Image 1 (tube, each protein chain N blue to C red):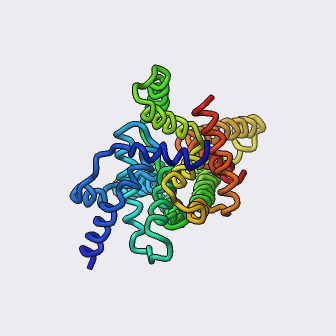
Image 2: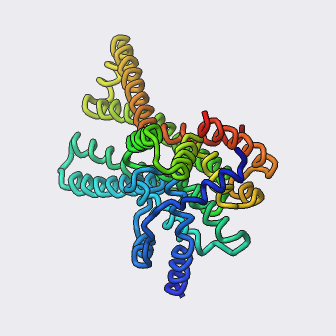
Length: 203
Length: 163
């Protein structure tokens, strides 16, 4: 069976489809994109807005408190929330780098894989940095609550050190596993598919 | 100015919508998902319409964006439809068709759907009489590679259609 035979079969029956009219086409120009990059961007924007809203709420609440442990705790969380806004901006910058428009299929796949891998790497790395930060914050709040002298005394006990190290390892393991599972579930399968397509193309 | 550009774009899509429909049919079986894909392709074409300077043929540009969207850029929500549809289609073929030519057409469509997504893109363009040079340009491989792969695809289709 030659290509010409296949062409003859192909042309003998044009696929049936419902043609779109001008109004329908015009309405498609203003719709929401369902591309993976646009979805990621929307997620990041949502998280960014949510963080900002929570930050403002925390600030208002912290200012309403007179003083004490709770106020310090809220202000610490507020500082972390503000740090997150830079993190989201960096995420958006990474996603905005991807411009698939006029590239060929091969170049588009390479670019999309690079963008997604870079994004996921940044996601994992940022969480790896944030876990110790949270842990340090818990210690700091403990120190504020107990008083520095009493806290350091308590911290120097081998039992406390062992307990803290154990907890740090457990929390780190659980959080890292959850992040990896979550990312794999959300984007990992799509990334694997893209890598498979690229492999197929380069064979 | 913007309205004139929009009008020009809509006319262009109107004129070449068959190309987009064929890409959608090639990659999606479920009519709803196919419709979503059509919409996404039109949206992506519109996004890059302002950067199209006419260096390539309009159909090459359209194939490039349509295939990029169908192959790698589109995430569908319903995922189980495809397999079921293929099973159904295969069942119809097995049960026999009154018309031989119609059976051949259905067999060809079924066989194409068994190919990888890249191979599907290449055979579709070849069947639509797109020259190898343009296929190479759209896919991003050499013309020689297109020839080699087309031979492989043809062999695969032959085996699938006449086992």
